[in-house]
Image (cartoon, rainbow, N blue to C red; front, top):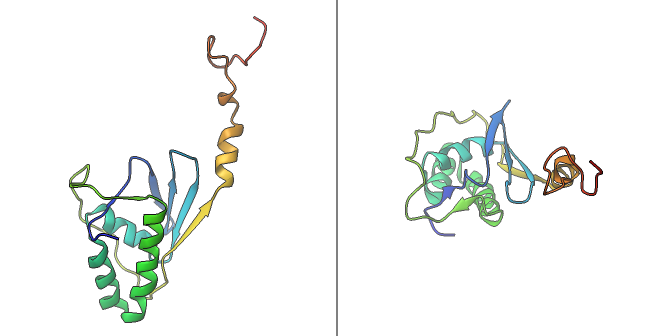
Length: 141
């Protein structure tokens, strides 16, 4: 993984609620949760932190043993295509305001595929293209 990565906020809208960061993959409807120090890592990525810089920061703060799970978390973000390798971020980096917790809890990425099924069951997807919503395909006028 190259050192410089930017969070893909266009594809992955996100919000942090009660210490958990929730993301939705706008291309396929998958829902992701970041737990542990995942929300703080994500916020630092949003602020323009480098992958190696984050691993070093976590290792310095929590000890060398914390660096490996942090690197694995960042690798998982890379595999899920949550990080872009751009020449420049799409927006100016912000400063990371989230404080690190006192105790290290490994960052984790949870993925839920069922949300894609729920989204596809939304009746708005069953639309007569010539009439639009709320007309169903084949519906008599």
